[in-house]
Image (tube, rainbow, N blue to C red; front, side, top):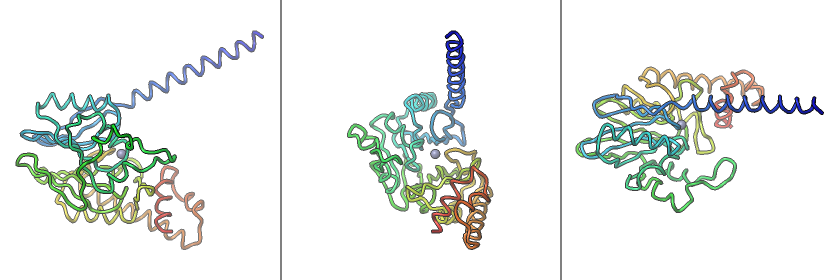
Length: 288
Ligand SMILES: [Zn+2]
């Protein structure tokens, strides 16, 4: 009896410590929100829960790129903005529909105008991957869904300052855009590049790895940008984007060659690293 009790006690202590250390690990992972200056009025929004974003402070209004995920993180972003300016947040641009970029929309003031690509707005209503309805079908959330959308190109004038919104095509999803600040030669490209992990391609949202290569090539050709800020990586230069495109082509070529040799998807996956499996799956699907 006593033995059994001891066993349960040991088990209880183990479970307690494991869950405690897990919760610490989770807390440690979330860095505080930080506004990192790029130029006089342009900032990168780092830290918090959710993707990295951007901030432009105009003479009479503020423009934010991407929204974080939680109320805490949005409040922290708004507090940091208030330390820099009393100007109200006028616009929030969603670079695409992934929840780490849009979930926080609902914690911004209702007076903000939300802007995104046509396909991104559609994705707000897309059922979740497990089939559950999207949270954005709730009537209370209507004011936080992009109300202005575009197809290929749109300019926003924040007072006299022109901010360019570009759509270069399908890639990570079917609705990823680029927010371009020509004076600073700085582009905010959302999740159209991952540098620390293999590129994510969301096939279920219309993403396509071959189109991704074309889209990024098109972006480099069209914009004279020198800095590329993204959702999860450090600021990239043109050479880094070119290398990324080459790397994608190599992945695609290798998958093509293996298919030609008659290999199955399972056999193909064995030729790559474990963390490349998602991308290889997407490339395989694109080739089918
Ligand atoms: Zn993201």
